[in-house]
Image 1 (tube, rainbow, N blue to C red):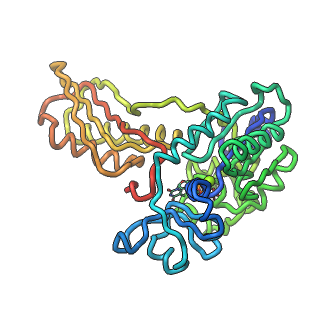
Image 2: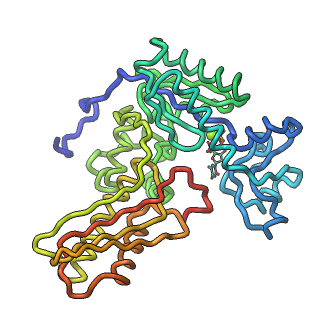
Image 3: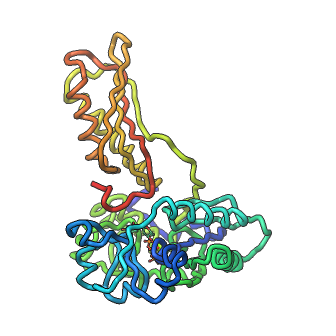
Length: 368
Ligand code: TTP
Ligand code: MG
């Protein structure tokens, strides 16, 4: 396909699927309130009390009462305290939340085995075909909301549409305990008015750039020529364009627990100079970043594997105290390993980089 003549009305758009996105409401806080109903009418903030941490600490989440004071996830606990001094601060119990998350997954699995847990409290379900032989994804979404309420005494919001992107945007529209459906014929109109930051994957830097180009909502993308957007934003440009046309053919990927993600290649001619090695490591790291992003994973253990021309093979590992997913960060660790352990002047015939210690549910403070 020639990019210059891209016509998104002609790109294949799978409208036949039925996708549900489920996201728990104020998840950690709701579990705590459920287990201690005295908290029900109070602002509840999941963070260590700033007095106990000398002002360090970050808010994981808070209930909707606390949100009315302006408290939100990722805010410092100190600031949350200033906004809401009567808030109940709770340290959070990750093990408990993970076990509730497993129970939620059990409920999903009554309806389909095509479940992709995106994080501890949200999942995509493909219910195009399903275990209860229902034609209605809306019905299944309601069943799931009912089961979660009845059995776990928690509420969730759900979005239903024909692709993952629209289902995810939909689930966020009527929180808490909402159900939003976006039909194929409604999608384009809906997307025109959608703020550009909701086209997920649009990070802070890109947002600034989009603002400079006066792109604030979906329809503003349509004023630009496809080639121009792709030149400016690369893959993100292409992705945003597909999405504003209501296209996201990505599949619900049931979670396989991957132990590591890596890339290795053999080289002939062999790698001789430090420049050769640097380029090889860098190329591997780009690919690893891609794979991590696709699966929304982070890792904290980097491995460098080197096979020299005499077939001697060595692996070197480094555990880091933060979780990373960016190629530049992985590159830094891998090149450090090479500088520390690589044999100078020995030609390399195989070089591999991999990352393990993989996790999806990374708390903000564990990130670089
Ligand atoms: P979210 O689904 O983003 O938030 P939420 O469920 O608390 O609230 P909402 O009703 O808006 O969906 O995240 C799920 C859980 O992940 C959340 O309860 C706590 C945790 N979390 C963090 O620990 N740090 C963060 O920065 C975020 C965003 C979430
Ligand atoms: Mg949630």
